[in-house]
Image 1 (cartoon, rainbow, N blue to C red):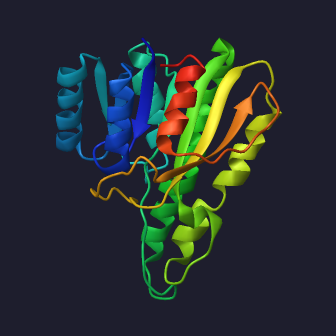
Image 2 (image 1 turned 90 degrees about the vertical axis):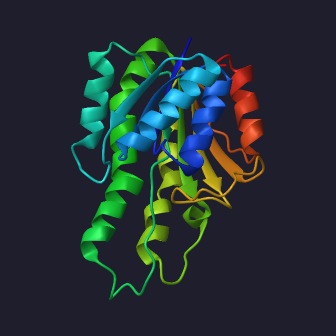
Image 3 (image 1 turned 120 degrees about the vertical axis):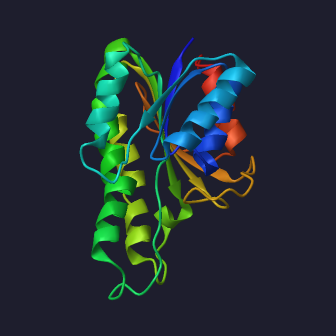
Length: 227
């Protein structure tokens, strides 16, 4: 049975994606800041789907968090077959008035931690010649917007980061950027099946771009033998 690691897993999109993985009988490593909520999700999914779950409490606004997560995974000798970088948050207001400290934390969570986690987990995937990476971002990745300058900017690098994975060859690894049009920043509104778009790069073949619903993305994952 394969294992998926999901950040921001205690609520919102992260919780929904955790359920998707559990439904497909993947064991789960769930990462978030709020231990009580995270343990509740882990117990719920473990009981309902008869899977193994591991909880890692970590704040991705802290630069040392990605290394802490990897160390915790390796301490239990776990192999991560699917990395879902979902954690993120936003901040609204006039740029000259918003808090710099909060914006620095937002860039750390939305951009830096994603790159750091991918950097740490990808070598093992390449060694196994198999793996999946899903980076969840907002539709802000494709546009700019008023009163949220840094939030929009923190989402915009995703597509370029995904494109870089096309340089790899000889490994069955899929990397997907998924952008949602309804539910962001851990909102508890219902995640519609059609509310995700995916821009994907397939490592081990020529790069391709694909826009599809969330269900179609999971369908392709099944077809590639990860379900």
